[in-house]
Length: 105
Image (cartoon, rainbow, N blue to C red; front, side, top):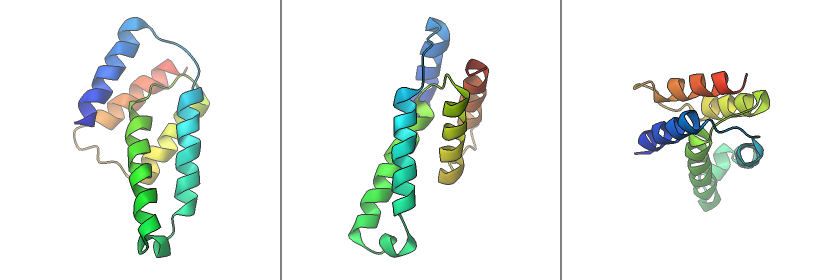
């Protein structure tokens, strides 16, 4: 369901010509980096590991759906997407990254 939300948000950004900084996006990326560093294989076996990975998954979808306006935001978004190994069989992730790259120039 979230790919439809991503496409919808992307259309709004393009149609409205939204510009800005990536403060909210960067905060989400920093939180994801922090959680990713906390997660270890031994935590996966404990109850805390599930909570960490669940929050990471939520952040990954939000980060993907958030428009990028800066080179730093784009680099952070790509890092999160690469770590998460998001499935892109339908090309939605590539389309979002392409639009982000054009906007972040």
